[in-house]
Length: 117
Image (cartoon, rainbow, N blue to C red):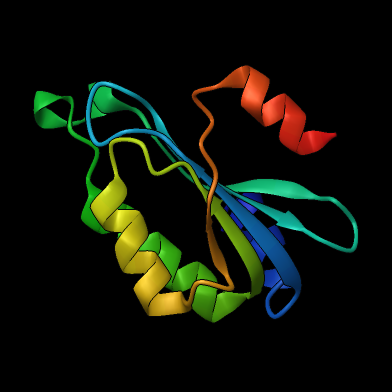
């Protein structure tokens, strides 16, 4: 068993947030979890476009990863950059609820900086 999987299993049921950023093609795609109590972070998945035909991220696998995370952990919030994956983020909002899945545009550094203040 991998170290990351072992850590994830130890955190089953814990309150976490999830960050989602990437694109369906020609960009890396990552899903990162953070345990709220400790701040511990680990990747639920990182997909490199060069590993796939036509440099297209397997969004069905990303979707399965999100399903697994929402079943395995107590997901308080998932912050998703919707750019280039709008339909997937809309599906997650419909599936898990508006109160849990939030849009977070990351393209504008200045806008993001103001959000953090």
